[in-house]
Image (cartoon, rainbow, N blue to C red; front, side, top):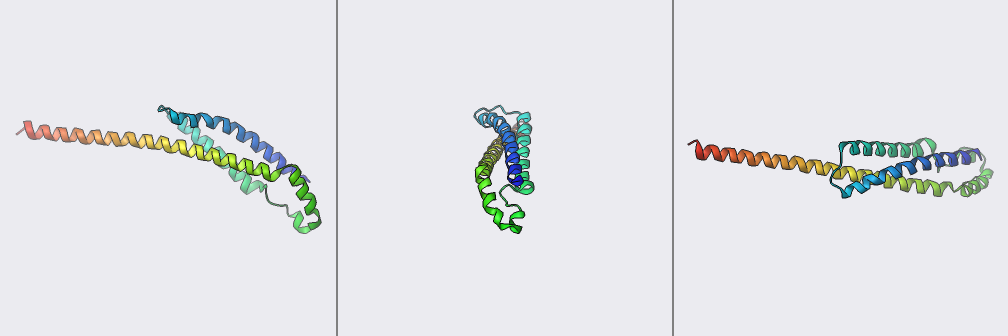
Length: 147
């Protein structure tokens, strides 16, 4: 019973944390419509992505929410009680909902970052094109007027 209650508390904590991150990530998704994205937005987005990855790591690696406790291996007669409690507190459903939110947040953050990187690389490409044109013009000037 303590295991289920602990998992429920952990899920509640991460649900609250992710709700905040979920609300903060929405402006970044909306920023895809605008052209003016700042470097500060990129940093904030990376921070949100880091938070999301950290929550995923804790849920999967440390808390082991969907794993059964070792006590059930030693006392199989308690498995029915454990399954009823797990169902009552909707542990699996809440875990899957949390995973879907984590995936959506990570996907949104990754998409926005890719757009920002694409925009930055496009700007660099234009600088290179301009430099090539200037070099060609200087070469033409040198050929035509210095001979």
